[in-house]
Image (cartoon, rainbow, N blue to C red; front, side, top):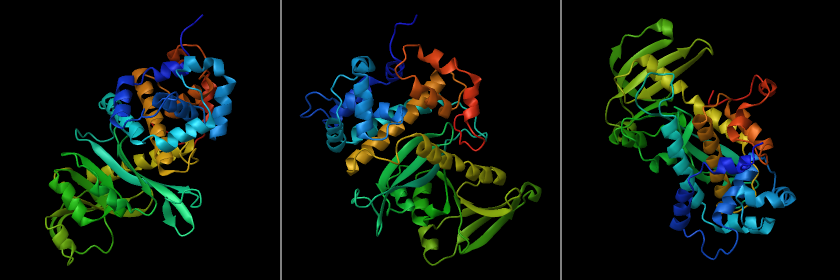
Length: 388
């Protein structure tokens, strides 16, 4: 009979505690703290994410019901609604943001060699944002509409592995394109974006940073064709052109040449026009690169369905950002577990198993592999899947 740690403790043991302590020290997270440490706060919030807790009262009631096991979970401080609420309100959210970035770095190294739909050595990033609606009366800082509040998660997703590498949280009024001002371009990488990011001044900055972009064009774009290249129209391609912009402002904002690729999707009967500053890749690859942008849409839908980021345990900006970053850390941790243990299940199945085995004393590998095949039947045909 196994007499080791609880499943939750085994999962948390995979986290780099020294890195977490460095993040706490960086932002003086333990200043004036006597009992409920930042690590206790992280463990309680991670427990809430893994077990789908609904509120602070729900968290308190659940953990108090197993008070004798809190020490074995790794939680040393007493858990109460007021203590957890104060911690989320006052402790710098950047502690958990920096720690999530540590986990993201680990996950990216693990998934670096994963197969990609395109045979590219370069890193491909999908850039997009999602809006989370909030009540303006409870979240007055999250401006969006006159009678509505919201926050935006501006996300850069590494398509190889579906790992979020950059997340910028703002109130709902911030336009998507503004995130390009705080994004540090990675030389040689591809940034795939929808036409909401079409700003030629910022795109020119990406090019000056030695990065490539693939972005959907608008219909009213003013340009002049310099060259046309032969394409295989049977593949859906319609044209591959080298152009220069002729608009009175766009020609100044982007004075160099651009590549324009038109593609007709036979399946959906829709036409797409792409702009890129890469003149080497085949035109068909440019179209396929844009198709990979759908990975970030799947990521948004997945975390909204399976993590607690639509109902918040606090109303301040600090509390909201703390909860979002801990949710991202849990997502990346589960992805790390999947890779390190060579699991075949998708993230949804792993998360569901962990949610009901938190207090079991069994080896985590056995828990995640020794289950009935009927578990897969719970996933409907339209269930979003990542890490297949």
